[in-house]
Image (cartoon, rainbow, N blue to C red; front, side, top):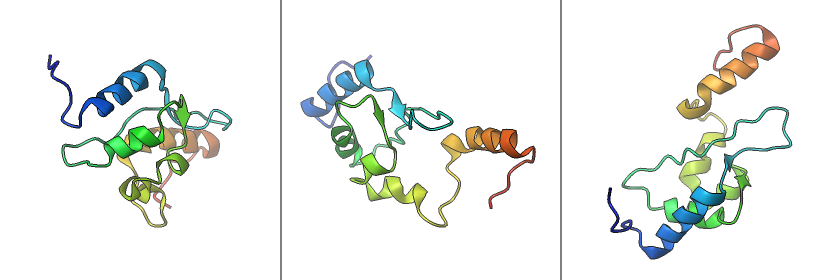
Length: 107
């Protein structure tokens, strides 16, 4: 296990520790369905991860769109004509099928 810290520094290390202790994920607990998850879409090139973690620090649940506007690449998935996001696709398809009895298409 690497214990030398992250390449993003001490501030990022602290954000990660607090996030592990307190963060449930992205979602809306007042909605009729809960799709709560913590998938961050991290890659080595993602310079916005620190910005995202800072914007959502000290929160247990975050709105994946409203709370993450600090990263235009992240909110791209909510814009008109965006492709289906693979992380949530199957869960959303199951929800839509349970409501309509039909397999959903891209429309």
